[in-house]
Structures are given as structure tokens and as C-alpha cells.
Image 1: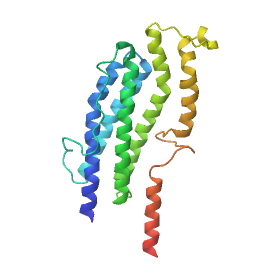
Image 2: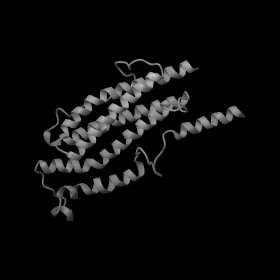
Image 3: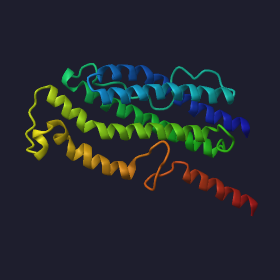
Length: 230
């Protein structure tokens, strides 16, 4: 039973390690492309460091489970390849980088959701440093980064248009003060904020709107324990 557990958990965790390894050089290119926008550049630098830390943590857990280095290729769906960052016009370089990172982080988050439920199914979810907790932590981190992108995208695109010389034609009252903030306000300051309150997955204080990815798995474990006792 223990061998089956470790084999299954190791397989999915090793696949996540491969995806993390593939993400790091992609993030380097994204960060360079976003250099014109300080806020986006800072976010992508943080995500880049976070991905490196994630990979090291996963490799450490694999070592604890008796596994060797991750395979060359993941058996999970491959990480989306950059589709437009090299061919994008300089005017849209920042938004293109954000778009590509958004897709990649969603992909990693989905991979960790799979690792999380597999770890729970094989009861690698109780001892200190268990795989389920590791997967959930990484999922939260990427989900929080995705929400940050949601909050940056409107200002980033508006800034790109301003740098390209596109005059704001929206007629907002604040245009005379700041055409960027005025044009970005409907999405960046209002809609994204509402979505953030409802759907964000911050790394620490989840709040009432957070849906714990481990809740259902823990409930199933309790039900199984009760059934065994009866």
C-alpha cells in the first residue's frame, strides 16, 4: 500500500516539478518584455523567484519520498508555449507578457490541484511536510499571483496605449488629471476589485470568499474514518 501511494504521488509531483522547471526560463523572457512597466516588472520578478522556490521545495519533497531527479518531460499536459511574446509589437509587449504568464500560472495551479487530490487520496496529507499541504500552498501562491495580474491588466494596457500616443476618448471626468487612471478605472478599479473580493485566493488570510481546495478531501477522509470505526 505504501509503495502504491508513493509511486502515484511521486509521479504527479515529479510532473509538477517539470512544469516548474519549464516556467523559470519563460518568466525570464516575460520579465524582460515587461521592463517598461515597473509594477508588472516587479510582479513578474516575484513570480520568478517564487517559481524557483517552488521547484526546490518539490524536489526536496520528492527526495523525502525516495525519488530521483524529475523526468525530462512531464506526463501532464505541457506548459503552454509562448505564442506571441516574440512576435508582439513593442507597444503591446507588457500586456502580451501578462497574458502569457496568466495562462502559464493557471496551468501550474491546475497541476497542483491534481497533486493535491492525489496526495489526499493516498493519505499523504497528515504528517509534517506532507505533499497535500505543499500542493495547496503552491496553488494558493499562483492563484494570488493570478489575481494580481487581474488587478494590473487595465492599467498596463492603458499605459501601453498612452506610450503609443493613443489619446483617451472616453470622456471620463478624471481625464484632465490622469488619462491612464481614468481609462483604466471601470475594469481595473471597480470590476476587478469586486472579482477579487469574491474569488481571490490569497496565500494567507483567505476570508469568507475563499474556497479551500482541501476541504472536500478532508471531509472525505473524516467520512472514511467514521465508516471504519463503525
